[in-house]
Amino acid sequence: MDRNEVLLVGRLSAEPEDHTLPSGDTATKWRIIVRRHRRQRRGATLTDSVPCVTFSPETADVVRGLKPRDYLQVIGSFRCRVFGPAGAKTWKYEVEVTSAKPVDTVVVAEDPPDGGGDGVGEEIQGTVTPLVPRRVLQLARAS
Image 1 (spheres, rainbow, N blue to C red):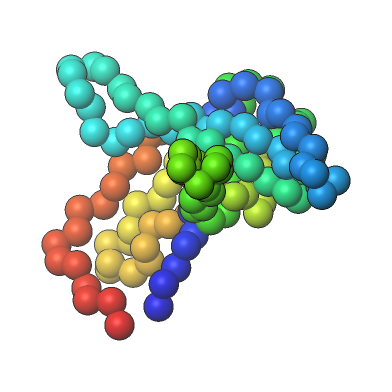
Image 2 (image 1 turned 180 degrees about the horizontal axis):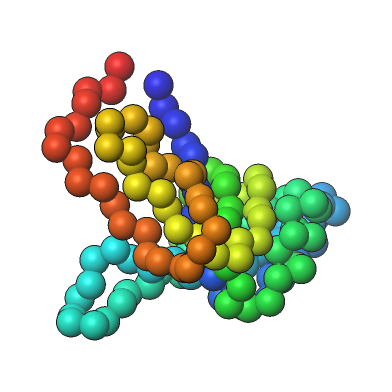
């Protein structure tokens, strides 16, 4: 079964921008800064700036209520949009956000010793720490 689900926790890069569409709807756009797990040089941390958009007024209000560099969690779907005339198409990738919420601090809980749980979404209030991917011994075949 195909799944297109995105969960990002990071910092708001700048104030969100509203764009009025020809239909009259409003698209609110912003970028979220997330740390990469792999380090390039000793002590250097790389980040990605991920473009996000929402068409939901409620979600837009949440993001507008934040200041740049505030932490937030967004949930949505990965989208590829195509713009331009037939001979010069441009592809743009972004996360279409369905919900957003401010996050004060995040610590991802480790899996219990018995191996139960997947460690995803298990958040505990505490200090901000980088999210570390779990080691996968073997990939299961999708059915």
